Amino acid sequence: MRGELLFVFNFHPTTSFTDYGIPVSGKFRVVLDTDDPSFGGFNRIDRKTIYISIRKAERNIINAPLYLYLYLPSRTALVFKKELSGRPLIFSQSSEEGRNPVCVEDLVFRVNAYPIKEGSCFFRYQTTR
Image (cartoon, rainbow, N blue to C red; front, side, top):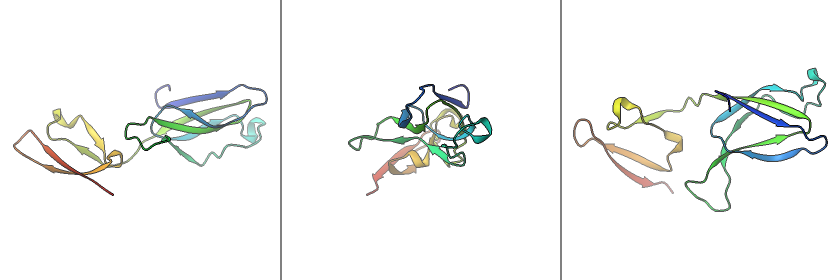
């Protein structure tokens, strides 16, 4: 990654890769695709798709790493731009000026915050099944 851009290359002359995992988190959209017909390519990449990092593990593990799984056609280069999530954030009252946000969608459990005193916060959580 370089800033918000992710560069992916497949220089192999004949082999394409399916579900090639890249260890990054977030949502990405294609901004440059050398397989585009305007570059003489075969149009094998859907440029309208938003690609999302997922956890893909044999077992359900909470701390399994996130991967972006991509189809990489042979002789192509792709450039992706990270999308802003636009997801609601929870800010802990005990964090310094709210600098430790947690994305609501990333929580595995429902969190109920109960202020104990000013400047601190107690969390009670329940698993949602």
